[in-house]
Length: 110
Image 1 (cartoon, helix red, strand yellow):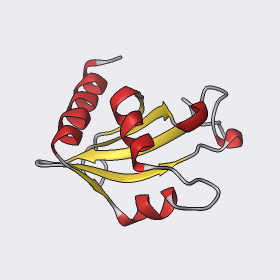
Image 2 (cartoon, rainbow, N blue to C red):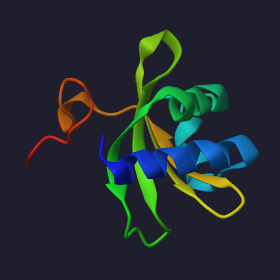
Image 3 (cartoon, helix red, strand yellow):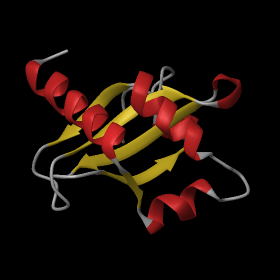
Image 4 (cartoon, helix red, strand yellow):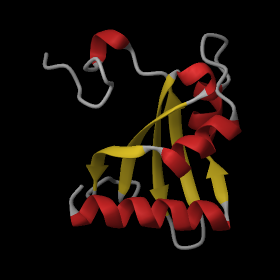
């Protein structure tokens, strides 16, 4: 893990301990009947997952995509952005097998 990845992950976890804000897009995606992702699963991914993509130039501010596992070991992706006083949870979803490598860490090439 590079220094930049370690830094963003440390920031994400620090801000998550202070305050978390689930953006409306995240809530919508989490509550889809085919997903039903709980806030506890998202927080577990943040606490125990790994950064698989880093977006330092994101228009929403520095953000990253974290891979972790939820209920029953299902893979989950959480996109989040650490802000000054909180962690913005932008979205959370179950990665589609046809769009990701077998370990869900790399996007399939088109």
